[in-house]
Length: 239
Length: 228
Image (tube, rainbow over all chains, first blue to last red; front, side, top):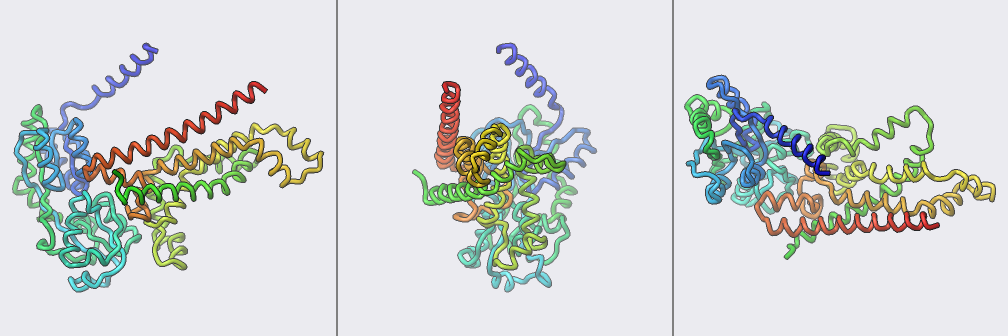
């Protein structure tokens, strides 16, 4: 029995040590994943530092970090989870804003871009991200409450904003409040930019987590906040 | 303690598992019988299709169902011809998914029981003049009752434990598709840990008791057979 146990432990330690130590591990909220992959590649090309992008919902990543996941940098989809990590003393590094998201009302079967009047007149089912925890879902609920529409629609909730997007794209729901970045990236048509005054700003904040790779992590942060990369982020549907 | 939403999810989960088990207990026995007895060349193919949910990630099934349920495709289009809302994000959609997803858990115990069923019983009963259906109700069913109970219980328990498929085609609608495992995930994601603890414990306690009852039943039966 003990022999088996030691063999199993041996295999596991072997697997763990196989993991690359040199690479920078970046945890990215799922709405920013594709852009992060692209930016990570540019960063690797420029500085010869490998970047591993892990993506999940902000809440999931937060919990993984809280329980010791080996991430060096966290790019959240909100400010709240970054603040929570600081409150839990998971990092003493300063946080930074790397993007601000935009919400769109997307109705692919519309004949042209919907207007605010079209949005106000919309009835039936609407795909949104989960307003209990997903940042884009919270913004969606705030926008619908701001326009007094919250009570009048039925909601199909995605676990994150990309799933809400997928519900509409697969035609299972006629319309949704999704991210501007997603409709731009997929060249979709017939959407309305939701006025930013309708909800709290979709601040996407990031923070360096690991003191051991502080230099590389800070280098990545500076690269992310550089003029060119910020320009690219803006062109992809962020403010 | 538990919120109204929690109770709603518990009720919905039990409703889904019961209905799924009922449907499976109608579909699975003939299918298992055919798999146990048939010698045709397509049997391995059908057998594999039934077993697929055991090995495929639930996300694969969820992904394909979401496409199939879309009004752009045959199944979704056909459904919409006599319904107002799409199959995705509906209770009916979850039942269809659960039947597919839990099928092997019901078919396999039955199939194995049918394979090991001693043919002489059937032959003797035939010589006694029992018809096809009489043999089914008077011989096969009473003899294999434990296997039916185990098959049903496994199907039920597995449906309660379903998560990945529902996450993909459910849309998280309270009272319609927000089952226990999804609500639990919701609680964890929104950092409501005490609510998550309660639901997790209920699921753990329920699943453990159900399995203990099934395996205890099996053990007793085994002893009875050995003593006989």
